[in-house]
Amino acid sequence: MDFAIGPEAGFGNRRLRLSTLTNTRWMAALGQLLAVLFVGLVLKFELPVIPCVILIAVAVCLNMALTWFYPANQRLRPMGVFAILVFDVAQLAGLLALTGGLTNPFSFLLVVPVIISAATLPPRFTALLALVVIGVATLLMFFRLPLPWYPDTRLDIPLVYVFGLWVAVVSCLVFTAFYVYRVAEEARRLSDALAATELVLQREQHMSALDGLAAAAAHELGTPLATISLVAKEMERASADTEGLKEDIALLRTQADRCREILRRLSTLGTSDGDHISRVPLRALVEEVIAPHREFGIGIVAEVSDQSGPEPVAGRNPGIIYGLGNLVENAVDFAREAVEVNMEWSFDTVSIRITDDGPGFSLEVLEHLGEPDLPVSRVRDRPRRGGGGLGLGIFIAKTLLERSGATLHFSNAFSASGGASVLVTWPRSSMHSLAA
Image (cartoon, rainbow, N blue to C red; front, side, top):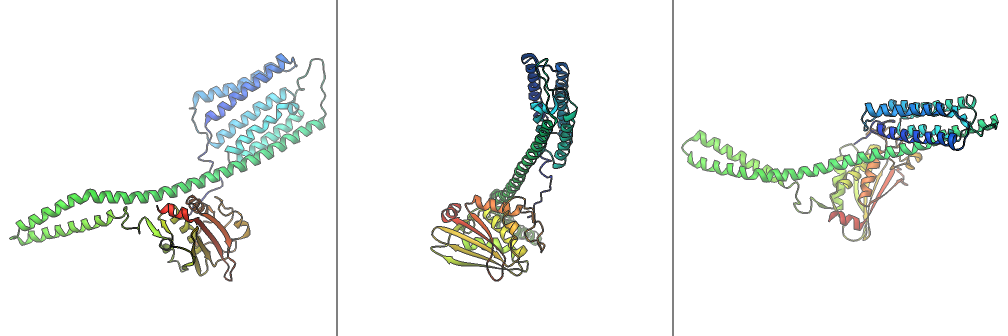
């Protein structure tokens, strides 16, 4: 099974709610108003209070309009969020221009909209918003009113110091935007991969549920079919002198018996008809895993290389079957001629090693195996027969197997045939608990 994650696949389902932005703006407007009143009324610094209050009121009016015309849980498209963040940058730039430009200690708040964009919007919007902020910061170096200060006192700030502030704002913007984007992107990739894992498990659970439904259907339909069969027998006895009707009744009985046999087989799907359904020896479980992959022209050899104690008995856990099946499928995809599945067990551990004779893992991929979105294909010089190659399948397999108590180790096989090797190891106690 192949899964694909596009470069912006995670953003469509993670749109910001309007209430998140409006609530943030309410807090920002309140903070701006308190700062202006404190500087003007408490510190008695000279500053254009009325123009500053007007700019704050514009932000408040926008908030009120958005709250009035749109529901609070409205999910905004990236362009809508981008437009609102550009407005926030422009409104803050206006306040800074009236109160000292970059020399204002609050000039570093220009970075906040870019951080929000990096965490929630596709990269192109964040890059464009960062350019807008850098342009605004550059204008604030030259077009600004003096920094509010004590009356009758002139505060001269050298241009080289203002340029240093510009460098600090731009450096902070670039670093924080990149850092927040990488953290958010990793969280998005992990969330998408876990969602795909849950879908796989859900599918397996649905298949298991079908067994129970089949058994229930067999139980419910068994009684009316038995009645039909009984009535057909009575009709057959009563119509002994009518040859044509007798043949029809015999056919009816035959078909009813056939239905009962089919339902009898269905009723055993969800039950433990012996231990071969819910609990199987390790070799039988491995054979069940590799059986679907024997028809692709690659020889698959399953053998026991070392054993101590009785053969482990494992439960038919969907996670183990899917996880091992995915690893075997990858080995078959990249093998030249053969795949080996070696089983080992002792009184403490149970191990399965899957080895192919293909090109093996490249070094850069070996470092990232098990991550949800592998950036390159497993082998650079040879295309994979099964397609895909994003690494999400291996991530899902690794997650499912680790949930069963296993640990995985990926390496290249040190043998004449080369190839890749995956070692899966369980504590024997975990294997027995799964079979319980």
